[in-house]
Length: 199
Image (cartoon, rainbow, N blue to C red; front, top):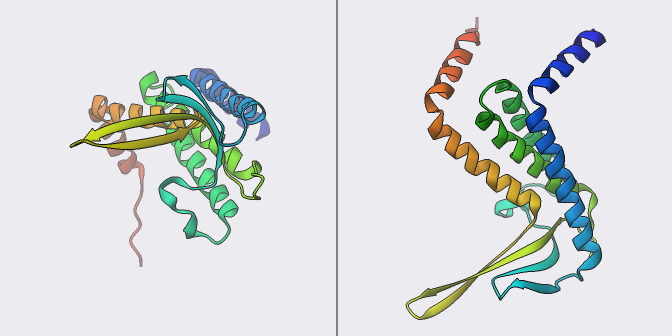
């Protein structure tokens, strides 16, 4: 049994080596860049790179996407569960599309790397105030002029966030580009599912 699992794992690695390399590189680059920023930039210090629009700005963000921290009394447990579920779901899709066109596989590789990078921070990075959060060190300031009123949109992010966004954009693109192929796969999957009616 162990030998069979090993052989299947090795066969999958040979097929999916491109996405596995991408996942590894992004995770390493994300964690390394966060570590360097954490030890070289003071908390809430802003270092401008492109005028007033793009800068380094280190902070530990305790908030969840869409502010869903209230869902659980223990935020760390909530983030652990969310990270595990995310990794399982997108790893499943990555496995299901093994051997297919690389554009069908890469989006899931980017998303998995992003989930892992931010999930690692949620579990192990703690601020001086005693809360767990994600290390952000890149900042974009957008100034929008509407009828003479200037509004500032500030975005703080990291490499994992970029990886997630790139992956989601690719997923949307793939859904339209390979819609017919995906529909064929879904229909084939449905035919293989046996639905048993209750007695």
